[in-house]
Amino acid sequence: MKYRLLFIFLTAFMCVQASGQIRNRLGVDDAIFLRYANGRMQQYNPQNILVADSLYRHGVYKNDANIKMLALSLELPVRYSIRDSLRVEEIVKELKTLSNTNRKINDFYYLTMYDYCNLLIMDGRISDAMLEARDMSTRASEKKSPSGQMYAYRIIGIIQSYRTNSVLAVRNFERAADFCIQAKEEQELPNIYIFMAQELIRMGRYREAGDYCSLAEEYQDFYPALRVKTAMTRAYLYDAEGDKAAFEESYRKLVSNPLYRVQTDSDTRILMEICRLRSEGRYPSALISADSLISAKKRFEQKHALLALIDNWEGAYDQLLQLMNTKDSIYIVVQNEDMAILDAELNNAQLRYETARMKARQEIGILLGMIFLFVLVSVAIMVSQWNLNMNLDNLRSRNLNSLASRDAYRRALDAKEKENEMRTRILQNNTRI
Image 1 (tube, one colour):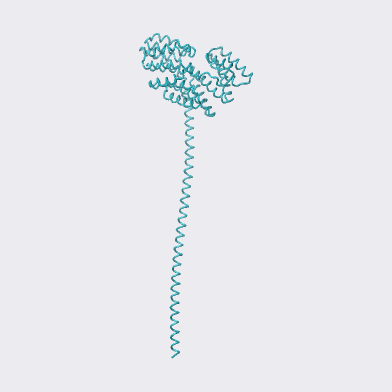
Image 2 (cartoon, rainbow, N blue to C red):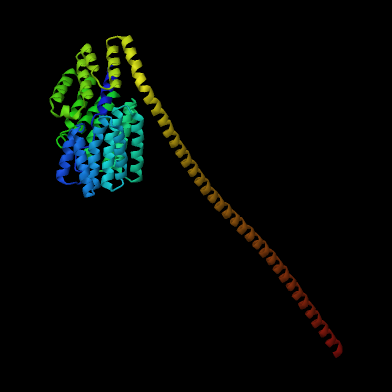
């Protein structure tokens, strides 16, 4: 049950703000970027709508797609947080249109959509987040963008974590890290290391989790915003290992960091507080804190786990039923979507297999044809050679017979000539007498 609670905390933390470091990726004017960066530091501040609107109008005036892209990415999280779904759809549609402008904007598009997918996950819209991640991966593959693939696989990894499938989550985070190195976006590596550490904690592989925490902490001096994420991950690691003293120390450092409240939402902070109360055995106080959670799903998860810890099985069962009611529609849609994707992938794999098999059969057919032709020609040559040898043998035999006949005839002529010569001599002798 302790590890179930830990997973719940980690899943929630996966969905807090985890975008890349705020950098002038599009190379806009310093004054414009400063306005954007200030807004990003408080990305859910309603005032960002006014800032985004001002930036967008300036981008239209300058006919500068880079500025318009910055404005839309600044406006998106605020519009989503206030449930302005119509405007969110318009922003996403325009972002996709602008992404085809140039390579820099295309890469910035993936970062923006990554943040958008995180919002979808926080809202329980897992199917929508998966579809967007698949679309990101397809676009990145077509445009040969390792940066896009990195963000796509990070989102898929987070979704698999949400589904409690740590093996697939780690596998996707590993692919994201590979693409991160290919894209030369090393500043994103610590975020991926943190995700991997969290999954390894859940799997009970604490030593590996600690190693990834250490790797992420090496970047803290360059990116101070990482301190909150690494400190929170360390705290969960110490809690999972049962090291209460280390957990308390990490918790105090975390909450005393001024960036802690800026970089986390209220539910994330409440979840950390519940973790502390539970580690101290203060379950009633933890239950009161759980009631303050905005997310119904997280509230049911926390209360179910806490009630089970104090052996209130009836209450735990009731919270579990309510939790499943909030999950059913999500998981049914996700399951149907996953089955459709799996069917498509299997069909594509079958098509590739059939094509490869037909090609192999053609190559084998050509090879067999060539072998058959070679054998046929060889046999023809051998038969021809055999016939030639037979003809030569017959010719030699006839020649030998002819020579023998000629020799016999010559010998007969010689004998006849000698006989005639003898007769001539006898006649001559008779005449003399």
